[in-house]
Amino acid sequence: MASIKPKAPGYLQGRGYQRPKAVISDREIRFKCFLQNTIIDVLRARPGWQEVQGEEEWDFYWCDREWMLANYDTIFLQEHQKILHFRNHYELTRKNLMVKNLKRMRKQVEREQGKTEGQSLDFFPSTFELPSEYHIFVEEFKKNPGIVWIMKPAAKSQGRGIFLFRKLKDITDWKKGEYQPLQDPNIPKDVPETYVVQRYIENPYLIGGRKFDLRVYVLVVSFNPLKAWLYRGGFARFSNTRYSLDSIEDNYIHLTNVAVQKTAPDYDPEKGCKWSTQQLRKYLTAKHGVEKMNQIFRDIDNIIIRSLQSVQKIIINDKHCFEMYGYDILLDDQLKLWLIEINASPSLTASGKEDYDLKFGLLDDVLNVLDLENRLQGTEKRIGGWDLLWDDGLVYAEDPAPEGSICTVCSTNSFLGKTHGLEHYKHASILKVTKLFA
Ligand SMILES: Nc1ncnc2c1ncn2[C@@H]1O[C@H](COP(=O)(O)OP(=O)(O)O)[C@@H](O)[C@H]1O
Ligand SMILES: [Mg+2]
Image (cartoon, rainbow, N blue to C red; front, side, top):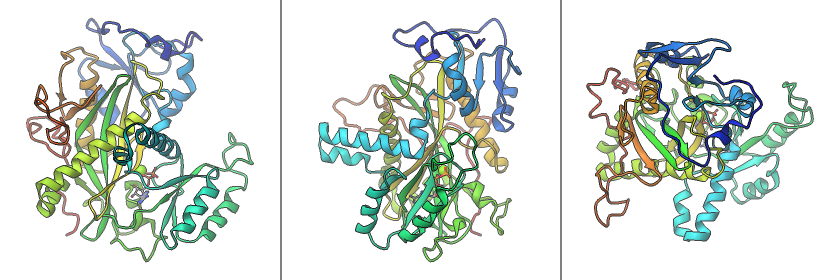
């Protein structure tokens, strides 16, 4: 049980040496989870797993980020216990910190490996933290007259508090507003909320005249050494309204969050606003050919690996912890990919039957990878819809990697948007092709 004894912090327990894997073979696996969405269904449906409440002992805890922050430093985790989130996951999932870590890594790579290699990190839009970097931002703003910028609260989600602007005056108004006392009693009254201001990608790739971004799922089971899995399924989230830069104040056009789109007056819950990644892959292949499409998906691998590496030494590694990230990635009309943000609690609420099936399969496979039942060898490169992308180095689809090959020519163990081999699987892990633009 995770006793609340003030012993050494949990993260110290797992450091420094490898212990044999703990096995629970003689009894039920006790899980704890307070979320009332797909994850609780998955846990309850799992044979041999038993739900516990309150202060009861647990083996597996799908906790929320707040619980992690409040309790992690005071708990002692037993050998076999598994818990969602790393202690300081926010290094990657708060918008300002993600960019800070990526900028630092880019500098380091440029210094050690040269400018060209540094360009492999040019996948995030120019971003500044406000209010701390306000003056640097203003300089940058003046250098690029007429472009659109987007303001986002650093730690909010679902499109809350976001707005687009072209004039500095709009920020001045915001500044005035922000220095007013805040609602949250825990935040001192004179401290403004941290925002990021980011170059708005004005030329998104459009399908049927609509903007979309991609939701990609990544499972990290260790940061040191880095071990990360990429899920084959996923989806593109479309805006409900045709894209235009004429009305930058209209969030229904510019923000692709489902939470935003489903409140649009003409939103049709039957149609939804999603395409499966598989559908998108087919579409892009038909439009641009296999080579281009492969490049796009290789670029996604690069974004995932580079972003995880940028915090590898900062995240407090603990073998009890795991993280399932939801990446938001935007494609522009030059087929360039942009990392918009990374979520530590991607929505597990289903927006329809297909979405439910996708999320059920995804989460069930998370449990398969974590393997509390101890059924695996430990050498698997694919578990359900999860493919091992990085295991202290790039993982190749062929085993062993072809002699003398470099990663851009031999194929990595990455199958995003491919579903072959999953047909037999109970939850097919794909969204059906929906007619969004009929
Ligand atoms: N720099 C940007 N350029 C273009 N669109 C963006 C940009 N940043 C955000 N968006 C749009 O706004 C949505 C919400 O932004 P995001 O950073 O993901 O915040 P949230 O945490 O509220 O989801 C994204 O899904 C995307 O559609
Ligand atoms: Mg988002």
